[in-house]
Length: 164
Image 1 (cartoon, rainbow, N blue to C red):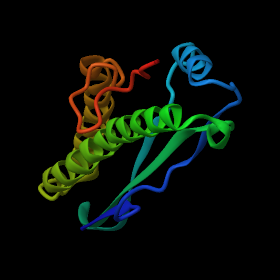
Image 2: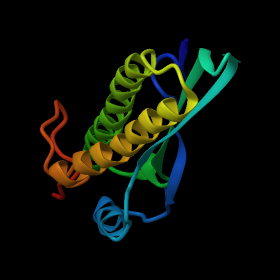
Image 3: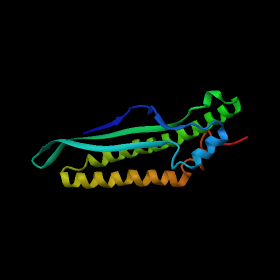
Image 4: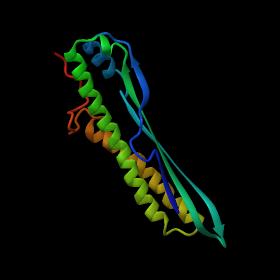
């Protein structure tokens, strides 16, 4: 009975939206029109390599986590004040996306514990599918409760870009 979480540590973000706008004000407008500035994704799968006498003898649960974060192409050419605000926004967004992954890690460990008690394939699939649904429901609730980070409480504030 194995739970694999990939990656083990922090997720390295891939490049997401490339934002070409020149000023932070224009960046803020662009981001407000996106469905999400960044994204934390997950996939959850299982395999049952050993079934003997209709009993599950072994299983593997694999949780794979990925993340995409925005890139501001004109960042290096902007005044220090705009860079600092972009950096703060980026950290707040990263904090929000990391919360999704922490939720998934916690749920995967809980699901793994529940699945240890399931010995036949039908019950195993039922418990897995219920857990899978819970992943989506609780991640949606996290976004709803935090306004996709715009109302979150984080060390970096919210994901709303403050303009000067």
